[in-house]
Each structure stands twice: as C-alpha cells, then as structure tokens.
Length: 114
Length: 114
Image (cartoon, rainbow over all chains, first blue to last red; front, side):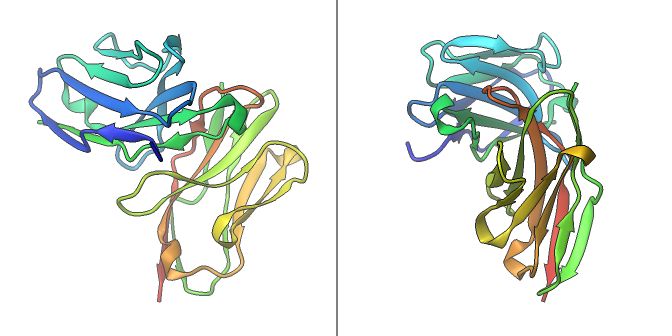
C-alpha cells in the first residue's frame, strides 16, 4: 500500500480485557517498529522486527505485551489483561534498509482502557 | 543509553515570526538525526533528516536544521512561520547506519496565531 496502515484507529477496552492491534507496513519494508505514545509524551520504543525475526523487544513494558510478525509482513501487537496505564497511542513504523533507514509511521491506534 | 531533550514544550508565535526549536541529544556514537511533525489528527511525518555531510539540512515546507556536533544539538528553524505550521514537533535520534530504534524527545507544541 501507499503507507503504513494500522487498525483499529480507536479501541476502548475494559480493564482485564485482551486486545490485538494490527499493523500493515509499506510493501517490501523489511524493518517494522512498534512505539507507545502516552499523552503529552514522545513515542517510546516497544519492539523491532526484521522480516519475521523479533530482534529487539527491550521496550515491552511487561510480559502482558506480545508482538508477532509471522510472515514478515503484517504485525500484531497483543496486550493481555489490559490495565489503565496501557492507555496510549500505539504507533507502527516501517523502513527499508535501502531507503536510508527513514521510518514511515502509521496513524496509530488510540487505546483507552476503562 | 540515548536520550533527547527538547527545551520548549509549548511555543506560541504570530504568523511571520521566526522559529527556533531546541533539541539536544545524548549518545556516545555516530548518530542520525530527525525532526518529525504531527499535525492535528494526522500521523507523524518526516520534516528533515541528517545522516552525514553538510550539517545544515533543508527539509520540507521551508524548515531547516543545523547539526552542531560539539554541542550535541540539532535545532529546527524556520524564518517565517505560517498558521498551517501549528502542530507538534518531535526531535529524534538513532544509531547511524542501522535500522535501529528511534529515541524521541517529548515534543514541542507550536501554536501559530493569525
């Protein structure tokens, strides 16, 4: 596609509910990143994939957070047993090594845990 | 660990005023530097980037930034702002030459009044 696509755009979850957020990167982009942006803050790194391999998950805040990219394209960020502090915008970005490592961002999924 | 500091959290300017937003980073190696902009309701978009070469970088919409290695700074400038520049601006840094994670500052909200 023309850009990075994320769905849903908005998600309201009850505390304790599991959620799954989807990212469809730019076609052919090898690298895929997830970031979490709390209100009034800059995006913070969660995890990084190169193709289907998760090379860095150092930013995941707890073991309730899990990400996958099984076929090296679409990625899913899953949050189990959501808590109020998980409320944030979750951003996905993709980049191609041949493209000068510039990252292109999706519009994000705004998660609100009530 | 990398860190990015943006000195101005909220800036209010009249149209045609000059803009300078400060950005300092902390990192021990060679870096790539970025300024991203987020217009209301839209995704993060790249304004400009520095990888190597001329430290004065020109981006879209009349923005420019200067990399001063000795000061670990990458300040964003525009000679004459427009109402349409109202947005949030994020400075970011990453390790050079790799598709590694971006570390963002907390952002500066720019409000341009008519």
